[in-house]
Amino acid sequence: MRDKPSFTDEVKAELANVQPARPCCQEAELAALATAFAGVADGAALRLRIPRNAVARKIVHLARTAGGRVDTLQKGSTEKRPSYQLRLTLPQGRGSADACCARAILRGAFLARGVIGNPADAYHLEMALPSGSVLLEAAATRAEVGFRRVSRRGRCVYYLKGADSISRLLRLMGANRAVMRFEHDRILRDMRGQANRRANSETANVDKQMRAALQQSAAIRRLKARDRRLLTLPAALREVAELRSTHPRASLRELADLSQLSRAAVANRLRRLLAVPI
Ligand SMILES: [Zn+2]
Image (cartoon, rainbow, N blue to C red; front, top):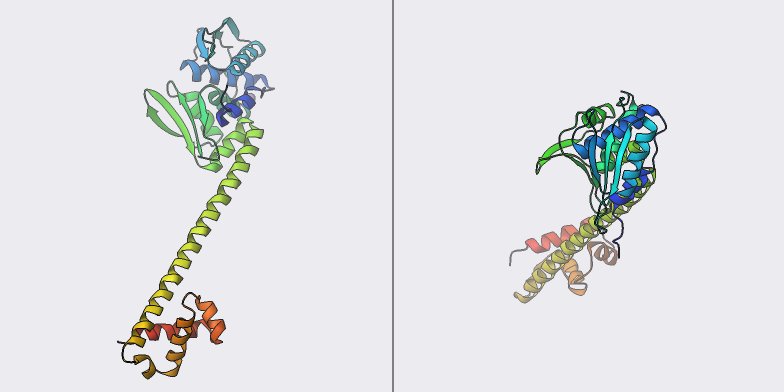
């Protein structure tokens, strides 16, 4: 049984089917794919090992339309983790300096080496390239994508954190369905976060009210126990003590309603009651 496809699988399946219309973008995306897989993209034929069928097909298609050459194509031997090997000679051109090609380069690099977290769990996107890529860095600068960069196990990892920047990159690469899924999950996640925060603060408030009520009841019991100390207090305090004793769990609001006093007045009297020396 195959696992449920990850969000990375979904995005790549979508991007593998985005066919750039302009010749400049075809060259640019092909160069980005080759660089990201092989680490270099000079004039020589490159040996690429590609783990995804759809991506291999896209490279073959791009090479044919953009004027490159695919010499050999071979399916890897293991059935479980299929891979595709091909020898690619890139066309002369490497695309233009226009925005369209910057987007094509970002898409190519992501198709080759990208990973994106499930938006319900984490906002993380990265591309772990065999080496730093001038092509990708220049495209990111042109498209105003602020990758951060770190080395990990000999690889150069370009990454983004933050929902806005990831959503924008998906859109730039042309993964429109993925953007919708991303934004949908993002809304759900935000709502869940808000609900949790609200529940926590409500619980904290109730706890606080409960503690105060218990403290007041305890103080009143002590006053009653001590030589009828309560009876010597002003009427206002005796009344509020009686009220609290009768309704030990009531909130301030409820005590105010019962006594037809304002909340502030009830709170004030309870404070004075607590301050009575025993
Ligand atoms: Zn272009």
